Image (cartoon, rainbow, N blue to C red; front, top):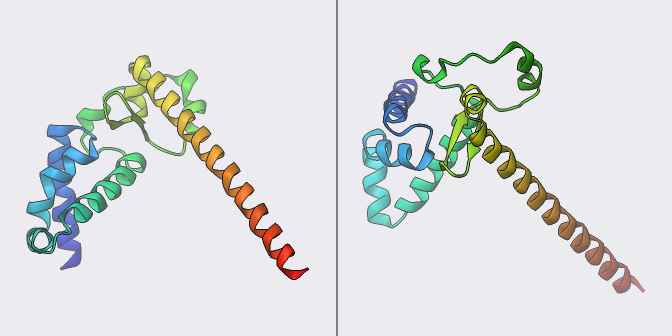
Length: 153
């Protein structure tokens, strides 16, 4: 029973991807009510519909990032041989292009260098933001330990 529901969900996702591309928000909006009719209805009544939508969007973001599209038409581009070693180092099969608002498969990024540029700049900016946040957490950790030590004196 659960496998049938998951199969139905992913069938709906694949159909929506054909219309909307790898845009998690658009795909989520296209599939939620059909994939989860009872849950969607209950979430609207209980005021949790945005939480349901956000959860499906988060799931689809991860799914699109790590799962190659099943529609062969979406990956008709080959990766040039000199680039395969570099592409092999990537952990994800698609990357977020901020200007498009969706994940784009690596072969499509290669064929569209301006999208590849957007994706790499976005990833670098997110990495720098993560490092900055980690530095503040380091500072907070040190301050917490200093307070603890002061309390022992």
